[in-house]
Image 1 (cartoon, one colour):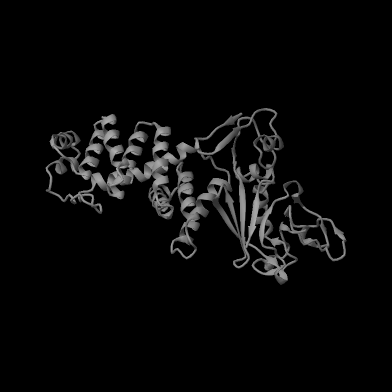
Image 2 (cartoon, helix red, strand yellow; image 1 turned 90 degrees about the vertical axis):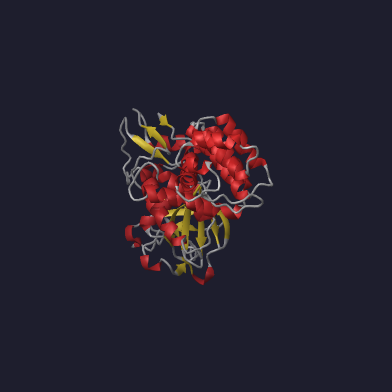
Length: 394
């Protein structure tokens, strides 16, 4: 029995709401007025207009009455009138005013974007999530792509400050916001490592242990269910079901048990300079690992696919120098160096990702071209990678 988590749209709405809520507080509750770099409109300071006192004290009805009596409104006043109408639940009037601001390209860009956020907030408050997402998409598409990481980082920070210290239902949203911001950061960014550390904390709970995350898919076990059947049903690996539900190597499940189902496309980025392997799910950071690489620059660069059907637990190994085959042996006592797991590349004969019995080789160039990982860590990567996964080495 499948239990579907919240839709992608609803996931994003919480992030939107956090940003919009912050905007609302910053502009409507604080004592100081909103200061926006104006084009032709005058900057409204305290005392310049009688409506502001009512507006900041939450008397939106009186503020709206005063603004409505004016023969001509500045763009800032139009924005505030729209905000008043939202509070007074006069949504049609609010949307008409705010959409006119958004559509007027001669209005200061900052004010136009604030008008759009007000509309998003209005729809979210009315639980019209789909409409809110349409509005939000228009907002995002109008932004300079260079501005997006900072916006996403700000949203992530607001969620982290409120919910990051203790496990709770909003950790998926924080992971999503930070994941988007992280993708747009350069490693030279002073906050790069900080955000990665926060993602490590969030992702450990979300993906690498038994936890209930409402915004992810779940399966409620019924009589007759088997892990191997569930893996096939959801097009994921049995190992990933075990990993995400803290089952270790157990295959025992019971009726009524709720299993977290981790869907998505997994990709890997390997940096030869840094001896690092970074795992991504649907383009968002999951985890970074230290790896060993090929001696004499034997590890190839480029893009590769995973030969998912050829992955092996307790793999045998063929010595490329003489063709001799070695069965799996704990500790590699017979000379088999592949460790506990083998994940071959489809395009490169004999090259892949595997464990090692020589942990001291991690971070060094000692292999015949393969990517070496600690056995405890390659087990995690093994669980995520399938035939749909790709690997980039540079």
